[in-house]
Amino acid sequence: MSSALVLFALLSPQIANAGELREPVLALLDGVEDAPDAAQLRAMGEGVGPELLELAQDPNLAPTRRARATQALGWFPTEQHREWLSSTLQGEDPMLARKASYALVNGWGDQAVPLVTPALASSDVQLRLATVRALGSLGSEPARQALSARLDLEQHAAVKDLIRQSLAR
Amino acid sequence: MTSLLLALVLPLACGDKGGDDSGTDAGLQVEDLGSFTTDTGGLTGDIPLSVPDDASSVMVHCGSYGYSLLGTAWHIKDGAGSLYYTNENHESYAPAKMRVGNLDDHLPVLFPVSPDHDISGGDWQINAWIASGGTPKTVSCEAVYRIDDVANNASVDINAVFVGLDALGLDAAGAPEDADFQAALEKADELLSQAGLSLGAVNYIDFSGDVDTYSVVDITDSDSSELGNLLKQDVGGAGRALTVFFVQEISSSGGATILGLAAGPPGAATVGGTSKSGMVVTSADLRADPASVGLILAHEGAHFLGLFHTSEKEGSTHDPLSDTPECGSSANTDGNGYVDREECAGKGADNIMFWAPSVEVSTKLSDDQGWVLRRNPAVR
Image (tube, rainbow over all chains, first blue to last red; front, side, top):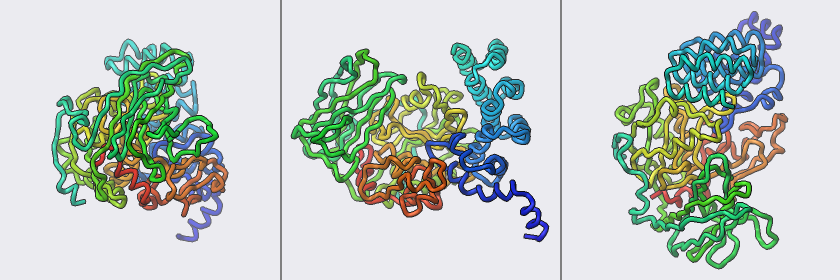
């Protein structure tokens, strides 16, 4: 490592902290039947959010770990995370797009409704289903309005049924 | 791996009737136990079992009672009338080397699940308890007895069902030649073989049901369980086998990804058409890390066949086996509520049934774990 990189690392506590937490956070992401919840990740300290972003963006990491990191980013709602999640929602990785939809709704609540509503018209049925579930879990009036607006347009029976179930709750 | 190379390669189309062949397998004996109605306290009366003298394991299953209700075994009495298992405090009862889950819709109960708690033949009884809120529920019950010899080198067949994995380029026709899928099977075989259990014939099956619903299995809706409904599907294949649904992803609360889930545990071995008749594996990592998918297959398969986590994530619950290390909550030195692999080094993190195993670290199975696995009715 060059001296410039060492100096940069020393002057950037957030990045150094993120590196230190990589293995402990990854260990939590390895649960077979359990993914960590917000409280368990937050208990690990301030560097968890940046570490999750690095893991979510790491192309060398297994897709499910990146997906878990992406979904967990919603529990650390920073502007940087919102921007990355919004871009990932429109990206080409269908699994990460689904996680981004959930993360935006989990982290930003009603403020995320306009961000995720376009995904209700995605050509990817699974992304539409995930977004209906995410908005359905919100249950707020803006979320219900977004779902109602999609109901008449939706052609896929499974998605249409899920919208109806979400609105009936 | 030899057994895998010799495995029967049999692509099937979903819909061909296969399902439950346990009634015609010479190594199994099936007893229709009849229908039983719970009282206002949720308990069934005594359900009598005629356990054969040569039975090495028993799997009783009762259902269905719906996804919104939970059921469990309340009492099990052996042929001498002694409590083999109880769900209530009992002064004359030493805690059994047994765990029974609180399960929705359909209740499989497997015993023995520890060599310290073996069985003998005779007239046994079991009572089921269903949390039905005072409303009587009627369930049908059946017992499956494993009566053939338990081999030291046993094998279990696999019904590999592919559910909408077009994005991975994986289906029944291609899977026998797919290097990554075969690597996953090989890894699972390697992990289980140390316990004297190898993978046998593999039946490759394309799922022909509602792929859009089941390729991403959502497990958040307890009233209309996608997981249970998927496991109920008649996929054909062998009855005395592990039925494994390979899906894109399992999605849980808040959209969290789950890597694998087995019915139960343990599952309704050799019985098709119930919500506890198989297991599901998230396949998204297959191309990047096939060995990790193999680890999940081995881990969930072992759950289905009767193993529990050596230590659960909080460190407060452990499996009923004597020779697996326990990692207690005191190991949680960083205070995050989890006992992770680093904290549990030397205390079971190297076991494939650790709650958060890794391909690099978690490679072991104990003698007792092998004893349980080899006894399951689905195993030959």
